[in-house]
Length: 68
Image (tube, rainbow, N blue to C red; front, top):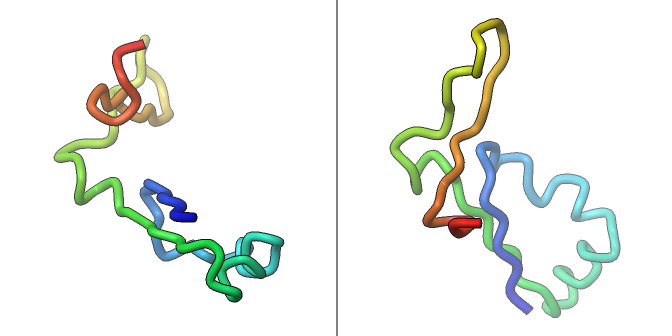
């Protein structure tokens, strides 16, 4: 089984997944983990907070999650 993870922090994987049941499946070759860096897939990933103030929002990437 192929598992694809899209994240802003690809260096965190497999991380704790390596110690779980998924880690055992990866070690046995039952699961292949593919980690993708979101910053290489999108030009921009952050958006301005609505209404001002501190904080960070992630842009809705329509090509990634659909138009729902």
